[in-house]
Figure (spheres, rainbow, N blue to C red):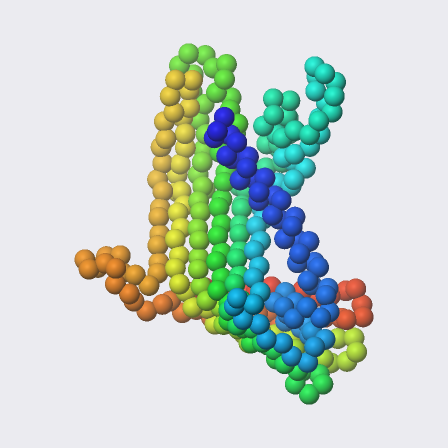
Length: 285
């Protein structure tokens, strides 16, 4: 039961976090005088002539999400078959519909998190139509991939009512997790073309701090009512400013350097509801 609750809590927190993050992004995205809205679209210009913020008075952002679950999939109201009363329950409740919960899951459920700490960010207007922004941020990105069979196994997986000696096999291939830390240094420029359209872009330099990840090439569990057998092949990778093979470990080494350039299709309309977003196509090298 503790294991089942643990899996449920992880899924629930991610689902709630995804909803909260979406609301926060949408709110900041449309606040005209929010200086940091340029982080979502480099074409945006704040109303102020300039701004500056730094730690601990700077900005920070934390978001989590997943590609399968919403809050209503894990928490909902149901009628108690004994008392006939309606109450709020979870998918793990005895009256919860576990099969409906499992049907909402993709074959691979992806949980991801992103934390950004603004060390120094500033911006100022150039003449009347231009706006320059400069920022230094620390970022942590993490992700976990959970195969659907892992949830089936955690929720019972058909291990009950098995004939003596019967075995259920669960494929957990694809199970993995990873975390990356890096410093992001960026400079952006936005230019107002006319009263309707603004174009902007941003260049970034990424300084790698550390990375750790694990993934499974083959992984599975053979479960019976008497025992569980784990079989598989997993891969662990680490990178950072430390030489793990050096006999005098720890030994500091140079940091990994990468580069990124943001998509320049960040055109924004301040008067129309149609606003074109952008995606960061940068990749840590």
